[in-house]
Length: 234
Length: 234
DNA sequence: TGTATTTTTTTTGTCGACAAAGAAAACGGA
DNA sequence: TCCGTTTTCTTTGTCGACAAAAAAAATACA
Image (cartoon, rainbow over all chains, first blue to last red; front, side, top):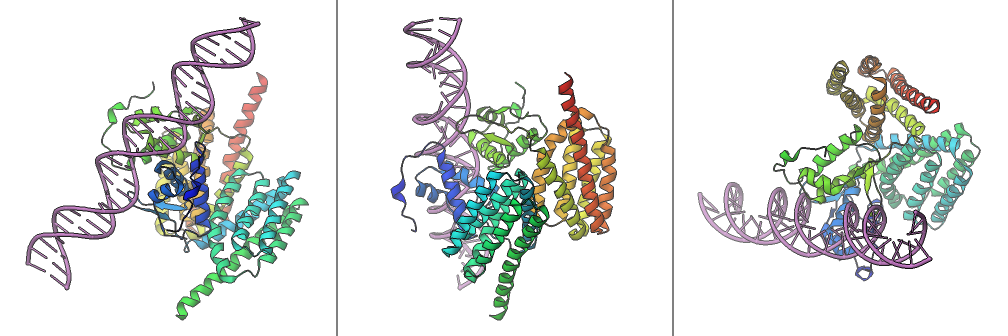
């Protein structure tokens, strides 16, 4: 038994249960609290949240729609594995979306967007200062999500959100091993991005978005090749 | 009453019901057989398919995940409206994905991919010859989906599929009004794209993808401005 | 001991029922 | 007749139960 939240079986409002389960499970998956490949038991979840299987099931269907869990027909459902083979494709898409969303933000942002963006940047900065890896990862995603939202293209924004979500799991691996060296640089790069967006400097925003994305990709790539070497050395 | 399929309440295999309902509803929505904004009644669907509300509900949750239907809390669920205000953003994303997927296809396709692509092109060509608007729209999407799949980037491919799906509804409007003029040109452009992909000519594939996308966007744009003028003239 | 077959157990997919939340209709007072 | 209140009706969200599928365990047989 790893849970002791039996005390919070309080009255919930009708219809709120699904969102509750969905949000919590999503976070646990993306933070690697639920490890990829581990099984998910509907009955156990139902007991844990003090509700029937029906709303649990609905939350699982939604998560499956996002590719975060996989459901074998008639048999167990499990947390999706991280697709290491597909990582080049992932990075390609991620960098492109960094570029496109930052560029569009420079073009289409409105004054009050910057407030929200600065807010996210402040939270990211605070997480870096506090050395809180999990918070760093989440607030970094929120920052870029806010940039994307200010670009006023819902299609890019939702696609980017999905990529960032998937990326949270890989970043989690990254921060687990490297132990907080470079995040300070990301804070500075974020500041540069904000400046370029505010100045409506489209070309510079594009360049910074691309560089920022490639930066992160390179770091993760370095981690992975290091892990490969370890395998060989054993 | 518009349905008379009460005869096909045959034995289904356990677990197949959801997919059945999902696929059918999805097609009906994208073909505009279910008009945007129209209400969806769970009970009625359950009766129509001869099953309980539970699997119907699961199919609806999935469709909601793709944005094809909208669910107001505690109140009715309805087919999503086509977001005309968001169309510039949509076209922007669509053209970019035309480019990227065609480009990647030229880079990464394998020999047997071309067979599938040519198959889809043949079906599209047949639909054009038969003047079957609905089939044209669906097979056109399938063609570009096959191109994207051969590019070996699952992230782009699934995003593109979603855009193409949403686009089917707009194309449906388009073909309803214009009555089959330009489709023949699209067949030729598809052939050019296939040739560029097969020759692994990345630059040409990129150019053709972009041109093909902008072509379609321009046509739809023309339709919409014409409609605007009609409104003013009344 | 090892393998094929049957039985038990676990877990999912589906069902019918019921209560909550709105919407629509019925009602009443000015 | 109009407007606010109450009552009925419709539709959703949730529940507990049960049967189908597959896995795991038990059994039989060589």
